[in-house]
Structures are given as C-alpha cells and as structure tokens.
Image 1 (tube, rainbow, N blue to C red):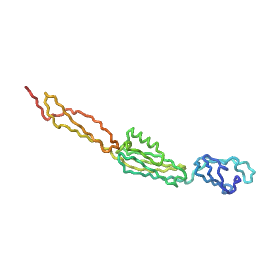
Image 2 (image 1 turned 45 degrees about the vertical axis):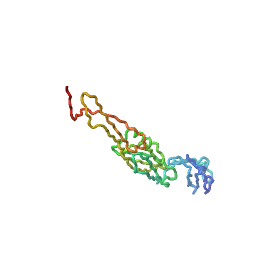
Image 3 (image 1 turned 30 degrees about the horizontal axis):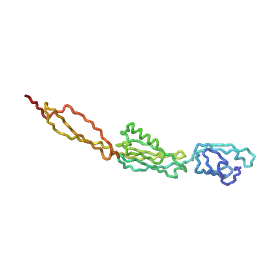
Image 4 (image 1 turned 180 degrees about the vertical axis):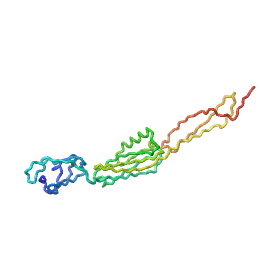
Length: 252
C-alpha cells in the first residue's frame, strides 16, 4: 500500500530500517513494488548490511494483510567505482632533507564518501635496515593514515645510501582499492675526514728520555643534518714492529 506515501518523497526511516540510516535519506515509491532510496551525506550503509522493512509500515495494497516483515542483505554494485590515487612529492632529496609525499584521490572515485589511506615502504635489495632504523620506519608508516606522509629527517632518521619506494593505498567504502608509489634515493653519508700533524722523523738515543707528539684534526661533513654542535670521538692505536730508519748505540 506504499505506506500511504503515494508518489511523494519521504524520509526512508518511515518504511525501511538499517544501521547507518541518516535523517537526510530520501525514499520514493516509483511503483507498487519498487522503492527508490537516495542516501544522504550522513549515511554509513555498506555492502553486507542488513536492510529491513520498518515495523508496522507496509501492508498489501487493499489493506487486508498483516504488516510486512522482511529483510535482506545489501549487495555491492555490479560494477563498483574504484578509487584513483596519485602520489606526488620531491624525489630530488639530500641526505638530511625532510621527506614529504601527498596522495591525491580523484573525487569521483571516492563514491561519495571519505576514503582510507595506508602507507608502506620497501628498501632496495642488498641494503637492509639495521634493527633500530627498521623500528623507526615501521612505526612511522604504521601510524600514517592520512593523505600526507611526512618524515622529519633533519636528524638523519632515514638512513642514506639506499633507494626507497613509498606506496600509498586508498580504499573507498565499497572496499575497492588502488595504490600508487614513488621511488627515490638518499645519497651516501660522507664519513668524517682526519689528518695527523707531527714530526715525521724524531731523533732519539737509548740513553735519553724522549717523547713523540702528534695532533689529530677531524672534520665533519658540512652540514651534518643541521647538527652544528656535533662532536667527534678520537681513538689512537700504537703501531708495533715499525722498522727504524737507522740505529746507533753509543759506548764508552
């Protein structure tokens, strides 16, 4: 009996019930057997949800039947809309540059609702990360859930001398996914340089105490990820079995 709604539009909750129904959902009977449903922006219904005839709403057209009680599962579209994502950002990076990439999703491919974002990374073969670096990277990517991935690299938290691939996967409410990736390389960190200054030759005899002094000067690459106050540690090693240029023994 069209619940007495004739051919006008009305709030869907008057005749159907499902989780996620919204107050701005609009329904209309296009015939005695077809109900057209237009979901509002606040609806959260998804494929697999149960949709039912609202209690005490529908009877037979002549009004002689009991109220209808029926339900069914909502099916996904035959040809669901798939999202389309594009990842962009600078791939010309120095070792200490902050890293930022953005994922842009075509609005039509969202199928009318927000999409979810997840990020992952891979490292070129033969350049596995040490445990501490892997822990940092896994944590950063595990918590990345929006359209922008940013890694503050000014403290050299992303190891260099490697090629990375960062991938963003988006999923719309129809459970359709799409991924896009960007690949970039970070250069090798240049090790500190050192020089030792002192006498190249020292004259000594066996009866006189003598000392040899040398000064080492270390230089950090400039800049070292903005750490202007970074310090160097020095260690010295005594070389044994060194051949003397000449020997002389004084006797009385």
